[in-house]
Length: 248
Image 1 (spheres, one colour):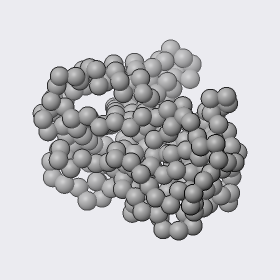
Image 2 (cartoon, helix red, strand yellow):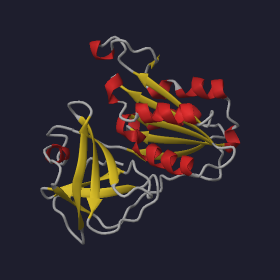
Image 3 (tube, helix red, strand yellow):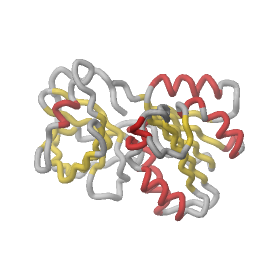
Image 4 (cartoon, one colour):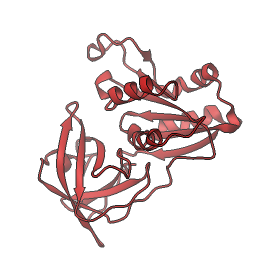
């Protein structure tokens, strides 16, 4: 979860978190690993709230609770829209951020269902990574996961290698379906996958894989317009929908 109006000043109780690793994927996307100063309990799919320079924002956690560090997937939003991320973008290994001591969020694994359709735009894939790592470590019989991720450019799929590896190793339990919305752009040269905005592809994908609607949860995470469009397309069906909006 990433909301657009950060607090004007940090208030309340905080712990700190030290940056122990950073991987830059593009000029404006990076993955970062944080080591909290105190034990930090959360459920896969929830978010943490971090801050610096008097600003704070929530970010979905990409790592499951079993991992020793908090992993985030962050997009640099330049000012005037972006307020916190320009400060985060400058941080290096060893630097610290503030962290709210408790995770929040209801966007978690829904065990009532056996078919899980996980739709994301770019950094919206983060909570799915946490959920998948946890669920594949102790799999239930019958669960099927489909990750549908949309991006403008092929280098924005921050976990594509991991998702492809999950798919290959899971014997059909995990399917990864990425799509780029700007296939003619030189940055997508060589792309051989699906094309189009991911929200426009969900219906056809569901028809193709045909999960039983009453036993299927559709998770939506990312851009609000994507979420609203998919919800409209699924209106009147028996699919259960969970959502987490990322505001810029």
